[in-house]
Every structure is written in C-alpha cells, then in structure tokens.
Length: 164
Image (cartoon, rainbow, N blue to C red; front, side, top):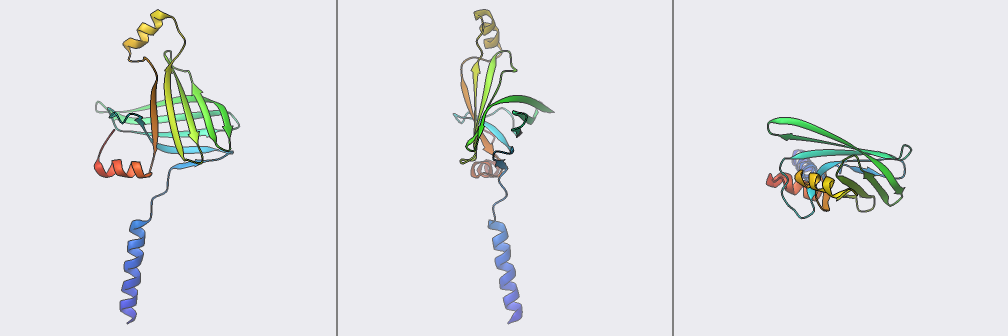
C-alpha cells in the first residue's frame, strides 16, 4: 500500500513539474526594469535571423540599455543601443533613442500588461539625407512587438521552430 501511494505521489509530482510554467523574463516597477525576449515585426513579417534581446532600465540615471545578439551570415553579432527615459511611472516607461542618423526609436513598456512595443520613425532631415537613408532601407514608420522570453507566444514559436 505504501509503495503504491509513493508511486502515485511521484507521478503526480512529475505531472505538476511538467505543467509548471517557466519564469517570465519581465520585471518592472518604479525601482528598476529588466526583460529578455526578441523583437518581431508588428505585421508578423518574418525576421531574417533569430535574435535574443535584453533590456535594462535605471530610473535614477533615466536611461535604458538594449543589447541584441544574433547569429547571421555564420557569425555572432551584438548590437547595443541606449535610450533616454522620457517618462517612468507606476504604469510603465517611455524611452527614445535618436542615435541613428536616420531613425528615432521609441520604446513603450507597460508594467500591467507585461508588454513592450517599439516604433521606428524618420528623424527630421533634409531631402538629400532622406534619399541617403532610403538607400539603407530607412523610410517611414514601422512597429515592432517584443516577445517576452517564456511568454505564450515565445513558447509557441520555440515549439514550431519558427523565426518570425
């Protein structure tokens, strides 16, 4: 009887362990913000290469750092971008980066929804600079969604082996 009970307990613990969700890589409040995930186009257009991005924000310094790693053309790459925090309150963060010659990036972090969206829009510039930026594919506004690591969408993409 004890052996049967022990087996039943072990089986139920194993089933519980398999259904337990992994931790969501999103943590934010008035004191700090941290998230890990990947950017995907808002229109579900496939990305060229798989990536993973980490975003860290500091309310005291009023900045965010975004580091993205990818593996493209047979080589690893890392891109780091700095954002100036425009607004930080109990609902989330708005931060912008105008480091690029052509584009301004804006991050909107929602603490209640545990979501991040991004937009890229052209900076104000002369027509000749606009043409040069167009040559590099920088024209118009685009939107991205941040898929938080271990979220339902992240897990679905991992299971399907899909890179959007």
